[in-house]
Image (cartoon, rainbow, N blue to C red; front, top):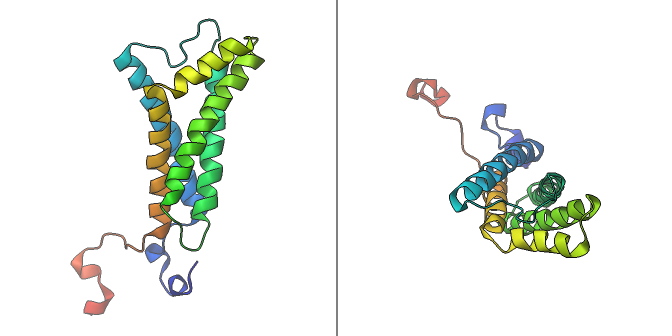
Length: 164
């Protein structure tokens, strides 16, 4: 916490990095699941179009995307002055994490290397890949904004102690 923040009452301090990371990670997971589901509905396509792989590749992909997102966002928000560039890096980490996770999940689930590669590549080269990156970008940007802000909570005019 910056020296000037120590003099402020708790309700006027910026959000702590760990709290911002927790909120952003929950938001990322929610946006990811919602975004992939809506994209699948709108396009009338499965997120993982290769038949017979089951749910394991999607679960492992989501897990690794979340881990990449959280690690990258944490590295950014724990700095003294976080950069919004962290959001771009988190988008790349989540995007690649999902692809690697789908590949690992498919191979671990018994698929051959060609099917696993086709599944991972199909996700990353479609609108689903854009949804993954977009969810990470928005969520990580929000975490950085929470940590950087110096805004105060909304107050009624009569709550201002300087008016006494």
